[in-house]
Length: 259
Image (cartoon, rainbow, N blue to C red):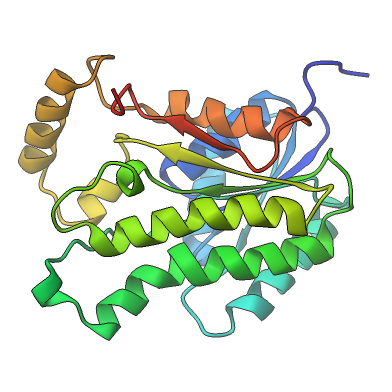
């Protein structure tokens, strides 16, 4: 039995595994010997990601499924996803990681509308809560199983225009800690990344020049001298899946941006 490589042979479901940090969690889990189910927002995105990852990890155990988290049927869709994942892999799910994200919407108070608020809240409020409900149904009751959410440092370090996003991030911290009690002994944790170099910047409307300028600004401020890289941030997710003593924890990986 592997004493420290606890993910070997485990079934890891990554919701939002097609790109960015989620793709990194998929790759890191495969390197750890896990059987991985990657969930993308569409069959096309999932299939493309699986093909790319398998090219790099040809011996890895990886399947792709899709789940559109934008629909009002999201609870039923998540339930179906978990059932499909168990059937496709032929074993129960041991760990669920939620990294799905959509473009960030920043706005001044005068720009607040219900439509914009609800758009922000879909993936950062509704989906994590309902995933907690669905996970409780599917994960076996054991500290060897876990649910890992994703939040953000903006809740602790305010910035103009980020009020709505900060509200959801602060809520995710509270949700994580309370779900750790509601789902016990299954463990529930969250990762709090800082600035990370992913495609979410481009998806949020940044041009290559704007992204480079923003990164140059932060590289000069951060103690590490650079914004986070996916392969480094992913280590926090892998740790939380493996440490059976960790629950209700928020693990920050933010280049020293809190200092």
